[in-house]
Structures are given as structure tokens and as C-alpha cells.
Length: 168
Image (cartoon, rainbow, N blue to C red):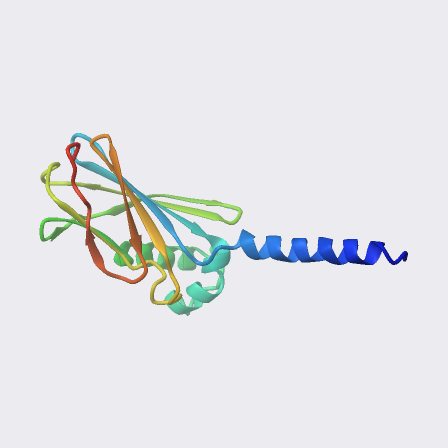
């Protein structure tokens, strides 16, 4: 190998190594809450399989295979998400029911539906997804309501009010 090729090769290898580090930001989740004019709620959670399999599944479904191909493991995950992500109007928790599960490669999408009793009520969100597994978690929740989007960030399991503006 010619001497001038070695620095070029080393530089290329360094770039490739750093690119893979940037490709995986962490174990964060994205949840999108959509509330229509009638108070119907649609919550969509975006997770990645490489964060869930096998470690999280071993904790939440120890009797199941640590793979989302196992129906018992998938049921445990949807139950876990239903318990660790909550929406409340006033002091009442909104009942959210699993509507759809989509597994596509590394992408996991879990969709839940609910109904507000008062579509103008002040809302609070509690996002504890994976906070009990990954202490460095930084989850984002986007709440779409009345033509406005509000973004909440969670670094621990806690309740946060959804800011209300002129549009709700």
C-alpha cells in the first residue's frame, strides 16, 4: 500500500465509525396525540425493535420469548405501553384502548384510541415509557389539538400539563 493511501484509509474508517454512532441517538420514544373537535383521541407510539428486543421484553415478559414474533411478548409490550403512558383531563385518566399494532422491520407503531368527556378540558400527559429500563431516556410527545401542536419532553416518568393557547 502506498504511504499516502494510509491516512486516507484511516480517515475513511474514522468517518464510518462516527456515522454509526450518530445513527443511534439513544433509547428515546416519540408519541403523537391527536385530538379532534369531538374529543376523540388517537395516540400513536413510535418505538424501535432494537430497543425493545430482547432486554425490555425479558423484563416485562419473562415467560415469553424475547422477540416481538411471540404473541405473548407483543401482548406484554402493548400492556406495558398502556400502563406507562397516560392522558388525563382534569383529575380523570382517559381510557385508552389498543387499536392497532404495526411491526415493520425495526419500526414498532402502537396505536391507542380514547374519548375525552370534555373536548375543551385541560390535559395532562404522563410518559414513563422505558424510563424504568433506560435512565437516560428523553421521550417526546407531540399533542395536536385545535390546529395547534404542543411538544412535551420527558426525561423521567412524570405528569406534565399540555400548554393551552388561543387555539386550545
